[in-house]
Length: 259
Image (cartoon, rainbow, N blue to C red; front, side, top):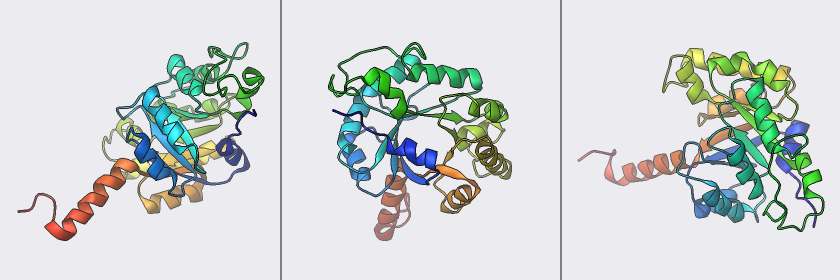
């Protein structure tokens, strides 16, 4: 049995735009619904959702028959969490809150087996197709994709150093936390935050790495793509459900909270 290829990693390397949806609902059923919607990738979030590796496993299994690539965000840059997500078959991880080259290097090492890293070895995981992929330990790194998230003023200052770390396949900008770090919590649309995001995209691209972003604002998403983002998430499943149900209710019942 062959090692599955990672079309997301290949698309980034070739500079092909990948449009994604953020999935914060920790459920395989909702993941499968989203999987057939036509997105290139789905982000399964375990940092800001009540999820874990067991629930994520169900999501990975649910979307496997569909032509969409799952990306998993661990709760932190933790080698044990990273190992567990890789073992259940995730091939692309978005590691949050990477502040500098040393932390980016730690994430790379967590993704790789010795002698290049510290990932623990098990030959009977879902990633190995339960022992059916010959030479998995030697081949795995070729199809694993590491995205690191810069989301503070300090991390933005370190973009070039982070981009220079071998094994970092892309850099994602976190607008919400960046807004807080810049002194504007809850205001990702503030002019200073927008300017910082736009400048970061340009610097990431100039450093030779694919840039990514999440924004539910269609106009800003288009702006980011123009500036050079290669993996662009344009919505969040929770937001789609909340705003969509509010709109439907308002059509028949008036505005939420009205008599």
